[in-house]
Amino acid sequence: LEFAVQMSCHGCADAVRAALDAAPDVKLLELRPQEQSVLVETTAAAERVRELLENSGCRAVLKGMGGSSEAPPGGAAVAALGGPGGVQGLVRFLQ
Image 1: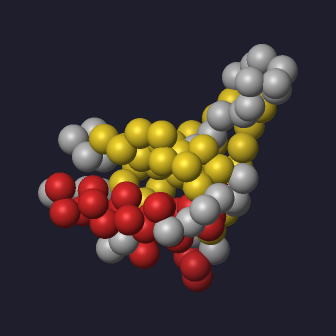
Image 2: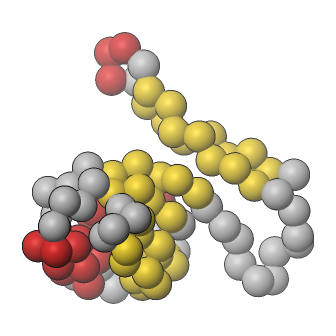
């Protein structure tokens, strides 16, 4: 999973790292504060990982989702949707 995370300093990046390190089912692959990007490998739901990231004090949104190396090749895209009244959700499109 790739998330866009609003990190304004190295302290934010440290807080994100600590929040993810506390979750045994989430493996941090890349943390790029300059690009405000976090890449993880996990068996947890995307929403759970987003909550972990936001518990660090930084806002986060899912940018993309990939499959395992055993998955058939093809394109994929993810859209995060939100509306009035707190309605929100994720849609994953697969080729």
